Amino acid sequence: MSKPIVMYSQSYCPYCAAASALLTKKGVEFTVIDLGNQPEKREEMLTRSNGARTVPQIFIGEQHIGGFDDMNALDKKGELDSLLN
Image (cartoon, rainbow, N blue to C red):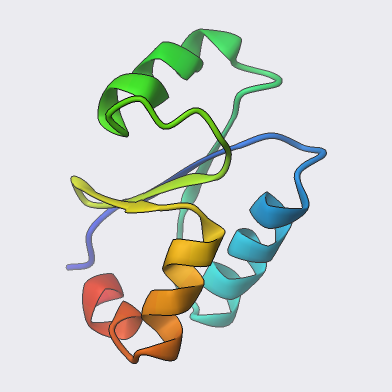
């Protein structure tokens, strides 16, 4: 069973779109929490990410991955697939 993947996002964010595209390319299901539509979730994101304010903020299970650049770096090092599975 794979870990739940959650991405806090906003609709106008190109990094959020890039993160969604990478996760889709990996063939994994993920939940997007759009802070534009659900602003009450911002506090939840801040708590889970230890105060990170930018989007996207990506979580695999309870592990905070960070933003798109962080996730992309993990992918380039070959470490993302093992986290996703």
